[in-house]
Image 1 (cartoon, rainbow, N blue to C red):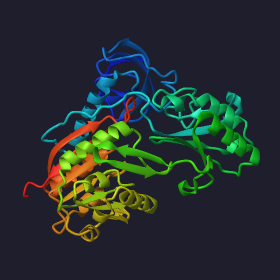
Image 2 (image 1 turned 30 degrees about the vertical axis):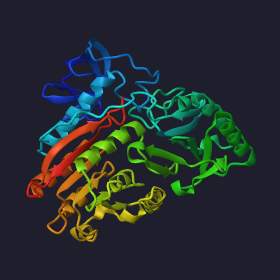
Image 3 (image 1 turned 60 degrees about the vertical axis):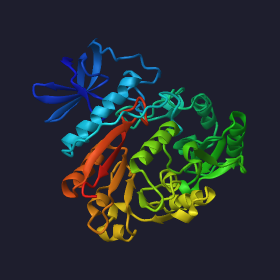
Image 4 (image 1 turned 180 degrees about the vertical axis):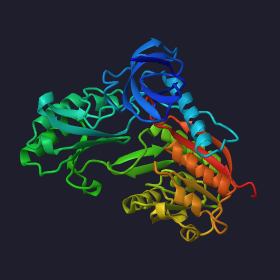
Length: 435
C-alpha cells in the first residue's frame, strides 16, 4: 500500500499522480485527494492502481447512487458531483487538443448539460450463464474484466428498463438455450421500447411463447436477432409501431430500427444539433456535406434551412434509412445520400461530391483522418463543424486542419452525452481565414 496526492483525471476517469517521476493511474481517486492505493499493473513508464482508502476527500466527492458502482464498468465517475464532471471533461478536451494536436481553440464554449440519470436510451447488456455464480448474469462488463457485472438495477437506464433487470434474469434462466443468448440490445424511442435478443441457436416454440408473454406483461417489444444486425425482426407484437425520436426545433421525426446507430442521450442530442447548426449557420443556396451522416441526424436539420445537403455514410442500410427519413419529412428535394468508405477518402472522392460551402463531420471513435487529409484546393469548405466522441482523435485531426490545411480552430466545447462515465463527446468549429 502506498499514499499519494492526485493531480488530475485521465481520459478514463482515473486519478493521475506522479510518484518518483512515474505516472500512476488510480481508479476511484479524484483531483486534490490524498489516497492510499495499490498497484495492480506495473509498466516501465506508468502504473495502474486502485484506491484502497480516501484519506483526504475532495469536496466534489459524492456517494454513488448505483449499488454496482466499482464493480460494473459502465460508469466510472459516479463518485464525482455531476456538475463537476462536465468541467473535468472540458479540461480533458482542452488538454487533448494541446498535448496531442498542439492547438488551442480561440473560444472554449460552455458545456452542454442534460439529465444525469435515466438518460440512456440505448444499451447493450451482456448475458452469461455461470452456474458457479448462481446461474444467469445480466449486465455490463465488470471494470477491467470480460466478466459480467450481475446487475439488478441501473440508474442511468430509463426507470422502466432498469426495473426489468430482475425479470430478465428469470426469463433467460427459463429458456431452453440460456447459454447461447449472449446479449440484449435495448433501444428506446419516443413511443416504444425494444429489447433485441441475440441468440446463437434457434429458439423453440416454448421459448418464443415465454418471450412474447414477457413483452406483453412489461409493455415492451421483443425482437430476435439470429445473425447480424440486419437479421433482427419483431417477435411480439409483430405489427408493433416503429421506433422514432423527434427534433421539435426543426419539425422532424427520425425513424430508426433498434439495431441502428442513434445517439444514446436524446436530450443532449437535441442541444448538440442546435449548437452544430448555430455554428454551421446554413442558409438556402449553400451546398453542405454531412460526412458519417448515419440516418440523417444532422443532415435533415441542415436541410430545413433550405441548403442542399450531401450525406455520406459507410453503412448502406443507414443510407437507405436517411433517404427514407428525408422523404417522410418532405426534404427529398434538397438531400442526397451516398454510401462510401470515408476511412479511405481521397481528394478525388471529396471533389466528386461537388463544390461545398461548408462541411459537418461526425465520425466514430477512430476519427476522420483520411477526410481531413483529403481536403485540398479543389474542395475547401470555408467552415467545418466537427462532432467528436474521442478527444484524442479530434485533437489529431485538428492538428491536420490547423497546421497542414491552414484552418483556424475558432471554438470547441464538450457535450456531457454520457454522465457518470469518462466518455467525452465534443464539438469544434474550424474556419478558413482566407474566406
